[in-house]
Image 1 (cartoon, rainbow, N blue to C red):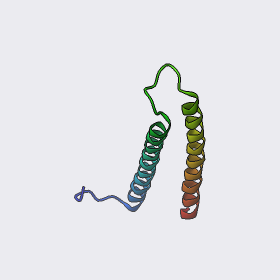
Image 2 (image 1 turned 135 degrees about the horizontal axis):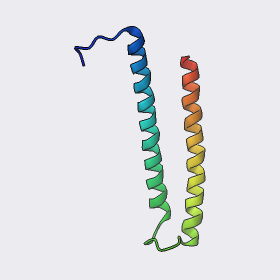
Image 3 (image 1 turned 120 degrees about the vertical axis):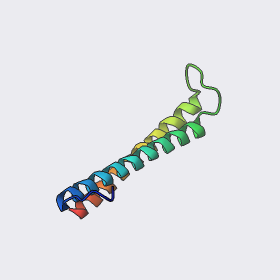
Image 4 (image 1 turned 90 degrees about the horizontal axis):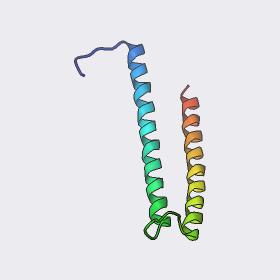
Length: 85
């Protein structure tokens, strides 16, 4: 890619695109990590057709915390974007 010369507008567009893609990759990684963590923490036995009562409440609580975290991440990213504009 060193041989390609882009004008300033194209460079800015590429930079913005890469930043968005990297942010999306971080969000996806966070979702994966939290999903894995909730499963490992809450599902203690071999899953059957239903979760045990304790597993179900643990998963619900973990999902609630996941949603809180996701909203926090989104608000933080939006705040950073508005500061950059």
